Amino acid sequence: MFLDLSLIVLAFLVTQAAVTGWDIATADQLAKGLGRALLMALGFLAINATLGFYDSGNVFSATQVWARALVSFLVMGGVVVAVLLLLPLEAFYGRTWVVVIVMLATSVLLLYQVLGAALLPRALPRSRALIYGTGARAQAVAQVMKRPGSHTDLVGFFASPNETEHLVSQWDVLAPQQRLQDLVRAKHINEVVVALTERRGGSMPMRELLDCKLQGVRVRDAATYFEHNTGQIRLDAMSAGWLIFGEGFDQGLWRSGTKRVFDVLSALVLILLSAPVMLVTALLIKLESRGPVFYRQERVGQGGEVFDVVKFRSMRTDAEKDGVPRWATAGDSRVTRVGRVIRKIRVDELPQLFGVLTGHMSMVGPRPERPYFVDQLTQEIPFYAVRHSVKPGVTGWAQVSYQYGSTKEDTVQKLQYDLYYVKNHSLFLDLVILFQTVGVVLTGKGAQ
Image 1 (cartoon, rainbow, N blue to C red):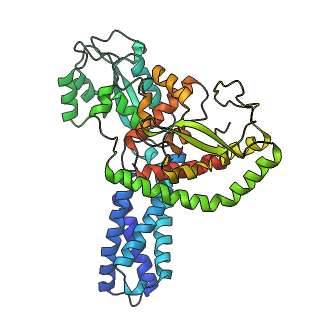
Image 2 (cartoon, one colour):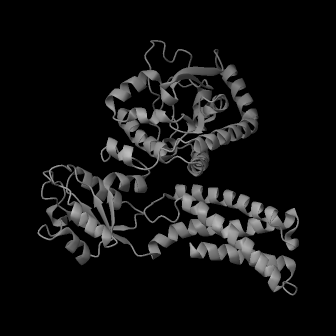
Image 3 (cartoon, rainbow, N blue to C red):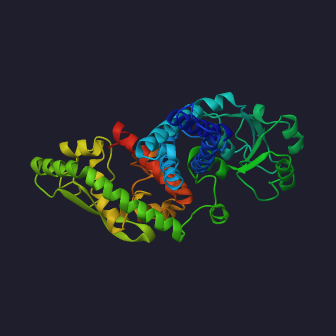
């Protein structure tokens, strides 16, 4: 954080002196510039903190780092312009100098942020973690810790005296006769992840875990660990109590209002930009086959409300002539030639932008599902209905994080991403998802 602050201040002061003239730049001018540079730097720190760049508990993929860096770049540009308009400097009076500062400061920081996110974890000391538990949940946590890109070293497992499930190798279980806090001190543990399959009957050593925390060791449960390191809320690790008493799920007036304004503005911009594409698509669909250009289908929205989602027709008109709903699958024979192309580049989704304007949908949120499948999945998958607490989206966290799903197992995986979004949604996360969506569209990732 100090390095970020220093880079912004230095970039601004160097640009100020260069534009003003090194020979006539006075101490008074530089002092005024320093105050404005500090305001910009504090804004940048606030932006990056919100995006999670300064939280060592977060692990982002390369795509997520790029998306967050782009969001930081754009928002920082707005901060710089705002500071210079509200507190203008005589040497920078005019659009040219504003652009010079914005392009210099934010471009340098964008490059630094991406490279720093890729290189710093390798240079910093790695965290040493202990998993409390030896069952299936402990195994799942260990798999995440051992993923490529993780900067955590798994030291081993600590068995609870009351746990009946032991699935990890006995070679990985550390000194069962030792007290937990003594083992943590001896092995220089930085983090303890509690991953017990059964917590009742005195399995949780509350006093020992508290002692570890008071010694400066991070203590987290498995559900929180998965949330911060996988971008999911895992169904096999959380409970209703964890959802109820945990933070998040912000549905306040301010969040709802800003999300609605963002939805309307972004939908209008995208409709204007994509209007020629939509006209060409409508013409191609009409030329290829008889039938309507648009396809209407009932979907379940916020609060269980049923509404019609409108898409460009990409399948034959007799795709479900027997009346039985089916998920789309890879190589689906019901898809037309034009439909195959527009599905690949997601053009078939563009008419849903009008659904955003009417208020049935949001730009970002869980994808709406058909009532037929919702009834089944609500009965079969716990907490499935939680995703209906926010408006469905044209794109979503699950769509940019997981491939197209056509099975119950895929639905469970995507639900875990949807739960993460419902719990943590914010304007910054919406922007990150939109930038990642652009990458998904350009690569055709996950199209069916």
